[in-house]
Image 1 (cartoon, rainbow, N blue to C red):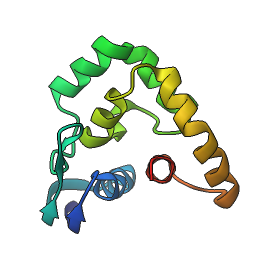
Image 2 (image 1 turned 90 degrees about the vertical axis):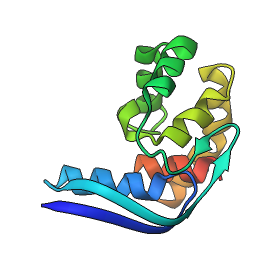
Image 3 (image 1 turned 120 degrees about the vertical axis):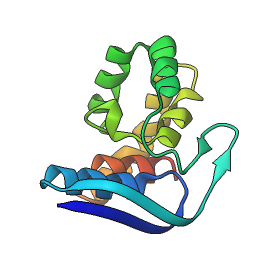
Image 4 (image 1 turned 180 degrees about the vertical axis):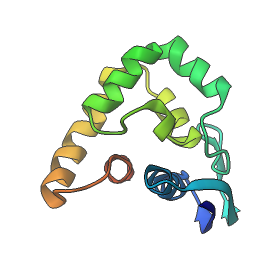
Length: 131
């Protein structure tokens, strides 16, 4: 079945992306999304750019190595694959110098959040960790 996802405001795109991943994992297909408002920042770009762009993927590969990055985000519980990230989330991660810097920033927040929620999705973990 085809779906159109509607949200009031898109900041990082994580809510829309989580819903898209849920629908697709259950046989649905998101054909469009809509929002009343979005955000923009120099670091993350437009929040309305949900899917990773080729530019962002190339930047991740250049900076971290795509295989190392994919392994890292699985290991720390952010996502199972880079494609699960929104473009804004990936661009935010690009703002860090090294993967170890991200790990140091995530570790205390993820540890605390995992104790609060036993069955949280990677998208929720990342949203909470960077809140």
